[in-house]
Amino acid sequence: MSRIANKPIVIPNGVEVKVENNVFKVKGPKGELSQEFLPYIKIEVNENEIYVKPNLEFMKRKSDLKKMKMFTGTYWRLFNNMIIGVTQGFRKELEIIGIGYRAQLQGKKLVMNLGYAHPVEMEIPSDVAVEVPSPNRIVVSGIDKQRVGQVAADIRRWREPNVYSGKGIRYVGEVVRLKEGKKA
Image (cartoon, rainbow, N blue to C red):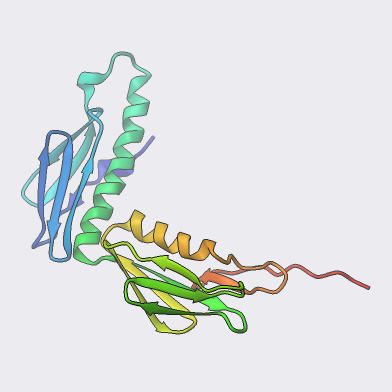
């Protein structure tokens, strides 16, 4: 059960919040996001705070309250991430390790040489920005945390770090424990 939903979500200046027909909408300086939610929760919007509570009208038995509280915690975190996204944005950094491994942007495509016989081309979604500050570094940024993480994971999936040599694409700060190779 979630206790984080007992805290209010603070609405920063310059952010508009609307709740209509089980859809939570947030508009801020970086963009606009919306999220549908289940009728198990009730959202109360005050001047600069949002409260996420279980909707007791849908409780048929006592055991339903536990499920409703789980939903309140999940949606509290989703709504909080939406507000952070439209104000600050989210960012994931990847590094490419390996001889001859590199990345570059060509228009709206990310082209990576990862040791395959052909370069890997990946179409960049319109709601996410991808930068390549150096040939061995990729920065994915956007306002939707789930979308930024998914695009970064899709890029990483092309060549995950090898546990013997350490070569591949990894998140900045990710620790890859290397295994010992064969012994003669």
